[in-house]
Image (cartoon, rainbow, N blue to C red; front, side, top):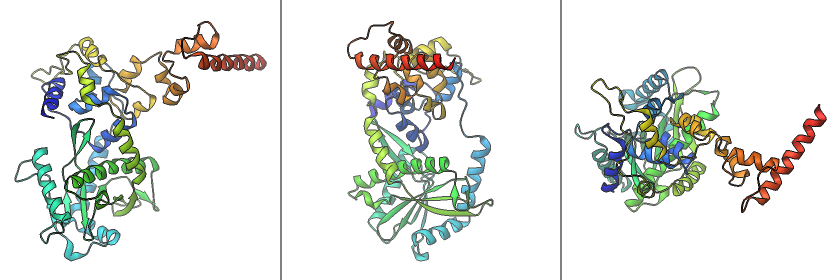
Length: 375
C-alpha cells in the first residue's frame, strides 16, 4: 500500500492531504461509480480549492457558525470529566459508576500523527475487548481506519463508550436540536449514515483482533441538544440498514489501482501555490488534468461534492445530467440529442437501441397529441 500512497501524493501535489471523514465516505458511497471523486478523495485533494481555480466554486458546506456551535456543544458535553455525558450513558447503556475510565486519544504523548493514534487506539480497544482489569471505558476521539477501494481512510468519531458485558457503542455528538422528541429527519438520517461508517470501521478493527461483528453494537448513541436549550439528550439509533447499504456500496467502488493505471504519467492536481498561498496553476491546464478522470455526475452531487458544478457543465447534453433514474430508464443512451433524434424518428436506432427507440417514439407521439388537444 506504500506504493499506492506515493502515487496519490504525487497526484495531490505539494500541499498536505485533506483527511477523509464519515461525511465524505457517506457521500462517496452515494455515487460509487464516480472515479473522479474516488481518486481525489483518496489523494486528499482539496476539491473546493480545485473547483474554485477552475471557475466553478462550491456553493455548499457547513458555515463557520455551525462549526463553532458544534464544537461548543461537544466541549460542554465533555466538560468536567464528561460528567453530563456519563449521566446520559448511565441512563441509556446502564454504565455503572465503578466502570468509568477515560482515555484521551487526540494525541499520544504529544504525537498527533494518524498512524500513532491508530496504533494506540487499537491497543486500548484490544485491552477493553478482552475485559482486562485495566481496560478503559470512554475513549475520546479515537483514530480508526477503513479500507476504501484499496487504501486506508482514517476516521475520528467523537467518542466510543465501552459497556461491561462485551459490547462497544459509538457515541456521536451533534448540535442540531431534538424538539419534543423529534429531530430534523434529514439531519438525523445523515448522522445515522455517518455513524454507520464508524461502526463498520470499528468492527473491522476488532475483526482483525479475532472478535465477532456484534462486539460493536449496531445501536449508536446520538447526543443532541434537547428542545431550545443546550441541555443534552441521548437517543439510541439503530444503524443496521445504513450498515448494509454502506457495505454494499463500498464493495462497488472502483479499485484505485485500476483508475491510476489508466491515467497519463505525471498527472497532478497541484495548484502551484506561491509564497502568498495564491494558486498559480492555469485553469485550462488544471481542467485538462481533471478531465482525464471519468466522472459520473448526477444532480444529487450538487449537495455533496465540491466538484459538482464543474462536472455538471462538463456533462451538459448528457442524459446523466438529468438524474440517475432517467439515465437508467433511457437504457444507456448517453446523449440528449440522440434521445430526441430517436423520439422524433430522425435517427436510426443502433444495435440494442430498438426497444428504447420504440418507447421514445410512442412517448413523443402521445406528447404531440396531448399538446394538439390543449390548443
